[in-house]
Amino acid sequence: MIEVLKKVKAIAIDVDGTITDETGALHLESIRVLRKVKEKLKIKVVLASGNAYPVLMGLARYIGKIDLVIAENGGVVGFQNKFKINGNPEIGLKARKLISEKLGDIVYESWQNKFRFVDFAFKLREGHTWSEAVKKVKHLIEGEVPEAVVAFSGVAIHVKDRVVNKGVGLRIAAEMLNLNPKDFMAIGDSDVDVEMMIEAGISIAVSNASKKAIKVANIVTSKPRGWGFIEALEMLLKTKS
Image 1 (spheres, rainbow, N blue to C red):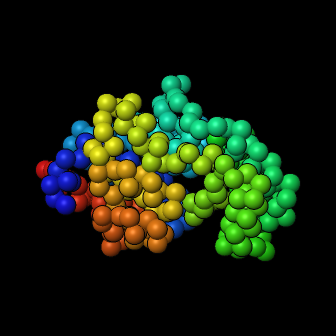
Image 2 (image 1 turned 180 degrees about the vertical axis):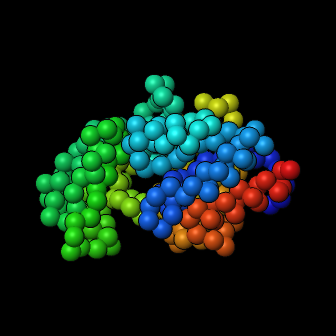
């Protein structure tokens, strides 16, 4: 594992649950350490999130030193006004309309959907559980829009063209940066990070990660969220210094 860490040329970082705290706010110490690692190791840094492209670009702008973003769970990859849209937007739009019409009493559209291309997100209404909502959304979409896939990120239910995921996004990001996906260390916490973690050369799950993310991870940190992210960066820094 040490030899693999030594070969890392880039980091792909999930946002929610990985560089945030228990309230969902940005974990500021994580950002400080990330800047330090970026400066010292001269590696590429990619943000990979289910958030809409403008939201992720805004975050990248204020974090600083971000080379590329993978937004919409792999649906959009790029930086500023140069980006690539992946998959068929019509599939997600069809599923979005169906969910709003049939399950609007359980979930409601994320405000970010106005700024999305491929992956559309839904939040939970009061009085319902995520497990109930995910089950009903999956049942509806599997029967009506089989070319779409439903995923739960831990903060929202996402629906999109099933050929799109963060793993696909990582391959495209690597190509844009003249790298190989195996040059990346991927750090995440949820089911939507799994494909990215599989594609990367080495994958790390923070301790609060989902069962699926932990199962595919090469390393699981002892700490959750932002502190787990710092643990992963310190591991990389120690190995490559």
